[in-house]
Image (cartoon, chains in turn red, cyan, blue, brown):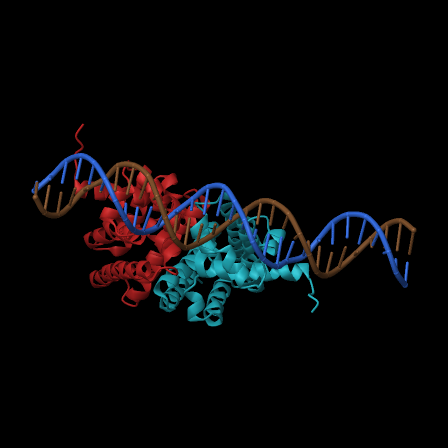
Length: 202
Length: 202
DNA sequence: TTTTACATACAGACTAGTTGGTTTGTTATT
DNA sequence: AATAACAAACCAACTAGTCTGTATGTAAAA
């Protein structure tokens, strides 16, 4: 009975289990013991890889949550010449990808932001900086749309990017409360109306 | 040294102190002992008036938070013949009323919704029902606007009401992260753009 | 009016359970 | 052999809730 060891593998196993617990119960609600139960590891392992619960939380945020949100919402933005159509495509895509159950847990990033921003400056700083990245990407996409003649030149792309970001995060938050996708669908339709109001009129 | 007793007074003192702690640290972060310290009362008093921490939380939600949000956002809606102007007036009013510090704590209702909806069905149900009230009031105001010719008859008032609700709550959430009012101002301006896109064109 | 009886409104010490974290020892890897 | 990667027992702090007792208010009886 020889047990194999793989440090990086173990670390990732802990990270993923911690992510699940944070998604289900929030950071404060995540219990170290429960994370361990879900990995068949013991405290020695966890505290070998992470110095504290806080450090584990930061790692989940930076290595799992931000990465995933970036793949889903930020990186694809470059593909589109028409950001108005592009952003709506991303929204619809997310709506098709995730189940009702997943929606009722909310966006992991938004959850963490709402819960921890006022309580822990480390979380808040990391989240703010990531939102600034996201905001910059949206603003850049809108500017590109202006250059291509799809977006009206009168649009303030900073304001508009912030609004879109807020609607996306707000929608997942609202959908979480209702425990079904109806708010998501309503907000998607009205976001489309808003996006069209940004379009260059010919 | 005769100590006066006033049951209702004592109860309200506990409620208000609990509200403050919940606003500062969330429901999970609220400590019964800290609430007591801020009132100069002891556990006997608190558990005489409230059967549990949960019951205290529910009371704060129903008797303080929902009442306040209703006064601020729902009841004034009836005054306006033009809901598009009316809703924007309410937003501006809130922006003028509350300080940066208050904004960085977030809307108490939204905070509680984000934190507790997935964790406690009692909180979730109460919050969902209250959002439905709010949603109905917005929808009604928009319908009235349609009858008065201010709002385009093609607008789906249910969708639009949900969107507006989501933007309001999302904006306070985003503003909390940034710890200044800039996101609020950006979102206010873009909400105005959205509202104007609902207007009846002549 | 005074007394009796009871209910309400608390105080304050105590408890059982939880939780993040530590320490010491053991096994695998290099 | 030396070090990294864990296991397992243990600890100290915290926390919601309980329990017993006491002071205050109140309504009925004498």
